[in-house]
Image (cartoon, rainbow, N blue to C red; front, top):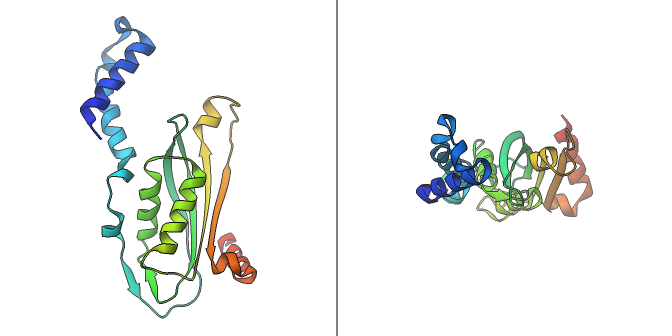
Length: 185
């Protein structure tokens, strides 16, 4: 991301919103602050996920769950934030994933312009098709969208839930139900 270009565009936006004569001390450094913030918020485009992911050979063959991974993202329709929690369940085959890697995967896919549905599916597809090679993966995302709170319907506390279910969790209802029960704990 070209921070100088972002600064220039934000300055233009401020002038458009407030008028050039209304710019004040509090907004003088806003373009630079926004450019720095966006560089961090959208760093999913800059990361190399393959470098960050570590898998381990293991003989564990039961469902593994990582719950309540907090995320934030930006709605691609309004460039307003949405945030929430991600739950990931997977059934290993011969490898397990390092515990902190779930958050890295979530951050990689959430720190960009998004819709929640695609983000959910991207997380699940990445895990399913990675070197981890699990027998199945389930991703459930609960998100609150500021574009729904601040504009349009102005709903005060909406929660959107999306899921992506792959492999054995999609094919075998008993295994899926076991994972869903564990997610309730």
